[in-house]
Image (cartoon, rainbow, N blue to C red):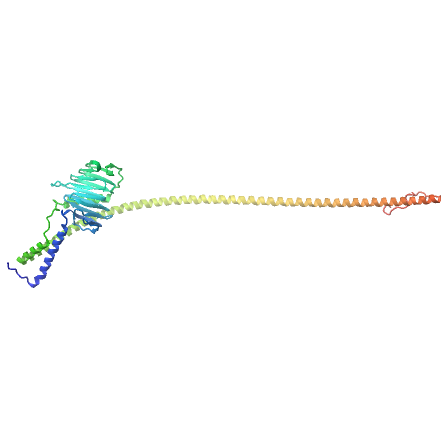
Length: 431
C-alpha cells in the first residue's frame, strides 16, 4: 500500500494527535487497572475528599467522575461530603467518614455516617455493608441510613428491607420505618443515644430531589470492556490518519467542537448544579444565621437578666455589708465609750483611793506625832518627878543632918512660926 507523505506543515499536527491518542490510551489503561475493573464512580464531592488506591497506604485528592475499583478506599474530612454511584445505587457519605469497596457489591464502613439509596435494577443488584460489629444485606430498593464507630452501629430503614447478621448465626430483619442500635457482634440491642444530623439529612434530601429530577443514573455503565493496548491504538490511528488525512482533520475538528460543546454543556450543568447547591447553602446559611441570631438574642437577654440579678445581689450584699459595717462601728463606738467610762471610773477610784491613802497616811503621821508628844510629855513628867524626888531626898537629907547637929549640941533651934521645917528649901519650879 502506497503511503501518502504528509506536508511539512501537517507533521507537527500529526505528532500532536498521535501523542494525544497515546496519552488517552494510557489514561484509559490506568483507569482500568485491576482484574475486575471499576465497581463505583465518584459523582459529587464537597470539601476535602481523598482516595487511596488498592494496595497503597497513601491518600490522594479525589476528583469528580473518578472510577473506584475493588480495594480502593474513600475518605471524607470533617464538614465534607461525597456521593458515589454503584450501579443503580447512590451511596452518600457525611463528613469524617471512610469506606472501602471490598467487592463488586460489598462496602466496608470503618467509621462515620452514610446513606444508601437503592433504585430498581432489572439485574437484581444486591449490596452488602460491613461495619466493625455486623453485616447488613440489602436486597430491596429503598433508602437506608447507617452510622458506626466500629463498636456500635445504628441502622435505620426509611423504606425497603435489610437483614443484619452477626456472630453465631445471629440475624435481625428491619423493614420500613424501623431502626435499631446494635452493640457488639452478637446483635445486642443498645440504648439509642445517636444525635440527629439535620444538615446531612437536608443534603441527602437535596440529592434525592436532584436524582428525581433526572440526575439518577441509567442502566449500569460501570462494566466497560478492557481498553486496547497503546501500541494497537497508535497503529490504528496512524493507518487511519494516512488513509484519510482531510477527513480525519475534519472529524477531529468536529470532535473538538463536540467535546467543547459537551464540555460547555457539562460545565453549564455543573454550574447550574453548583448554583442550586449555592442557593441551598445560602438558604441553609440564612436559616442558620436566623437561628444563630435568635439564640444570640436569647443568650443576650439571658445574660442581661443574669447580669441584673447579679447586680441586684451585689447591691443587696453591699447594703448588707454597709449595715453590718455601721453596726460594727456603732458597737465599736459603744465599746469605746464604755471603755472610756470604765477608765474614768478607774481613774476616779484610783484618785479616791490615793486621797484615802494620803488621808490615812496623814492621820497615821498625826497619830505618830501625838504619840511622840505624849511620850515626850510622859518623859518630861518622869524627869520632873525624878527631880522632885531628888529634891525631897536632898531636903530630907539636910533635915536629918540638922537634926543630928541639934542632937549633938543638945539644943534644937527654934523653928520659925508659921513655917514648916520640912519646907526649908523649895525649888523654883514649885513656887
